[in-house]
Image (tube, rainbow, N blue to C red; front, side, top):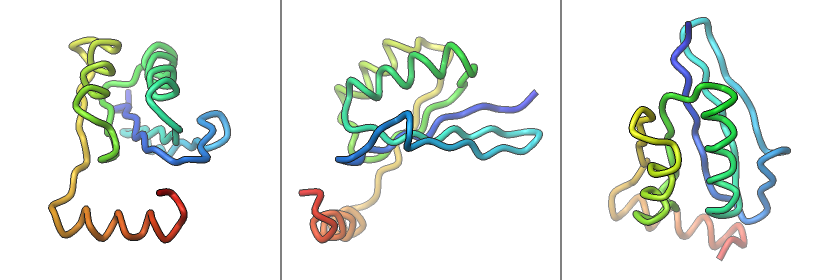
Length: 104
């Protein structure tokens, strides 16, 4: 049996049905989904926890504390949630790159 997790990130033009992949070995399955916002994130979590047995969720820095709390409430206490957050300089670099790409 493999450890199964989900990495989810925001993108302004995301479609979680289209923008998805699975990376897997015998011992690890990593589902990846891009979402536009919280409504899509909640639906992805609801579906993949139920259908794929997700045991851990890794979120991009764009998820707020409120978003994370809503996801935790939805998936329950048996699914771990981690947020990938950078330090101040890293966040500034990322913000500049996102502006250059037309996100903001």
